[in-house]
Length: 313
Image 1 (cartoon, rainbow, N blue to C red):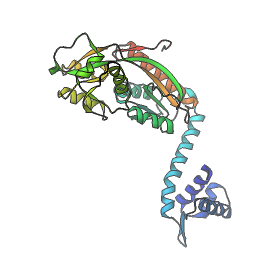
Image 2 (cartoon, one colour):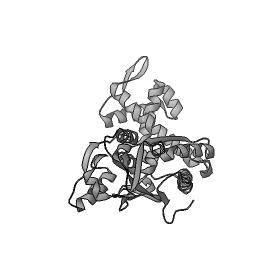
Image 3 (cartoon, rainbow, N blue to C red):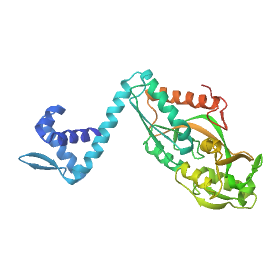
Image 4 (tube, rainbow, N blue to C red):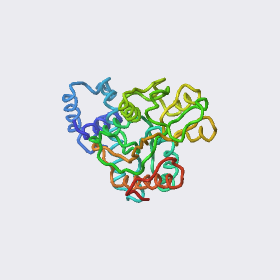
């Protein structure tokens, strides 16, 4: 089964009539009928009910048409993108980011891309590292702005833009914080952390284990960063996050933060997958996103972050 077969099937399904579909596609009616019959044989199922009133989709046909429409949409977008000058940007782009980065970045990206590329249709997705891994691997997103994973085998392109420091975040009821919070002391503090597969937890647990200790888990939270922030505000425990993720709560006096000792720093990169490398028109958009990220850091809008060595606007 090829994309051409699905497009012919879609043409017949949407016309409900073999002769009209044949004229639209540019084949003889008999040739189109043979192609549909061959497709049904390959799939070992009937796709149409044939009657004097025309063709109607079977249950299998109704299931297949969703895939056919997706293929057609993807091909149409690819054609439009490849024929558009790079300075006009692509017709669409799908971006992903973890919640802490999405909170800082997506508003600025959306505003800037609308101004630079008025015709672009931008879609954003927010998810944890495991979700982004799956989306990049499957080609569900064009690119992601994410923390650089240790396993990079699935990545096609990596552009490290900045380095971000993590902090110890505590409720006001915790009492005054020191200038730096020793990592080994995390074993004595009730923590709200994500599940074990999450990058932050893995790194913190590994360090604490060097001191023959383990984390004191008060609660696991794989929901949005907003939920974690609210749990800490309500004195359910402390957490480890970038300062930028809790900036409003810090300004409002609802939370307090201090750096960790030693530092835990993460690289933030624009990444793409091997299965869906950006097309030429999208590279211009990714360069614009790189510039936005650097400007946010240099303008003080991304606290506790610094531009990575070798990166420039």
